[in-house]
Image 1 (cartoon, rainbow, N blue to C red):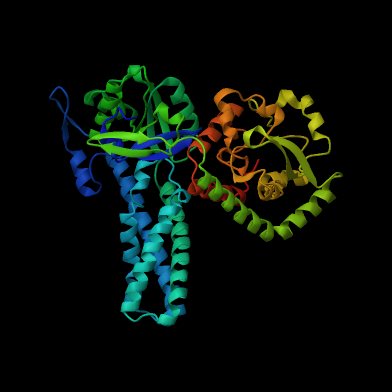
Image 2 (image 1 turned 60 degrees about the vertical axis):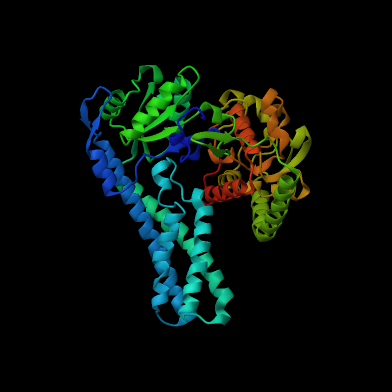
Length: 505
């Protein structure tokens, strides 16, 4: 990564592409807007002095970018206007010019925070992924709006705390909803982004599998690096022939730094979007810190494991959230227990020996979702296993009628909140494995046990039947080596979305 040109990395962004891999998305080297469209519509001087027009798909890519920016800005403004209408009734009783300043303020701060620039750089255009920036933007808008309203005399001093709380909560929620709908609208009215993979064949094949699952991506092909002319003329001919809008570069040691650097520079000069998938990041994840040193860029890699203060913070987070969740879901726990009891004979709670932190065994609790004696039937169904290392079946005959619903909605996992309170598990962490599965992990794969297993984790977000045991170990290793409390919140929120969509096992 550090051997690539500083221009390709210093202003780039990191996003996970699945399987513990991270993609560096590098922007085109000029600003957006009408000037950029005219700039790339002009002729370009190639390496041999010939003149050639910019690839036609660049203009299409820019139109999509402008449409996305404008739609997101309109969504933010509409969210602010809706909040203004409600606030004017609750706290003012009528309209005021000061209230109307909220909408442009929201758009301005969102632009400063980069909320209109991210979508053009990344392939995974997720509103949930930017909730922290939206919250920070909403907090800044709330403070600015309140000061304007106070100076204009639009709100009374006794309403101060209530106004601040209402504005922050309302703006944050409305912005997330509006931006999510805006992205759906853009995706529904725009053609998928045409992407071309260039580089290492094996890594390109794995990445292609991930991209095939994304509706916003149209993969036009994968070309081995040895078959690519990295000059400006060669890249121009390649992207024009395949009508590619983005090149995903997968460099490796056999390719050489010069070829990758030249390919990135040529693509950026042509106005083609560029993403990088360095193999080095497969073992360090996206939790790196850019360090600029006089035109050279280093990536600082966090050390493996958690410090004492981080462990304390994670434990406090687990206790607070798990305790609150048990209280809130108590009626649901009772109803689920009754449903399990009435559906099939046997105990309500299924307990099983699992391997926890540092290889210590513990007893994990779940609502029973299978018939009694399901473990003894496992060997007979071995030929129907659909993954490697783990035992997974898309249509397991051992699952009861109620059990299928519990698995689809993750309700069978609720008793594990007790495991979290006992300290055997965490809300977010490595997948809890049975002893036979854990015994298959050797060498560096055992680093995953440095943290307690979790009710959910990065493995849970991959969906059912999508990862082998070794791939799960890699995901858990990346999670353990890049842990942050914000990352845990991201995974918890993403899991809640999966639950609401009933995207269970």
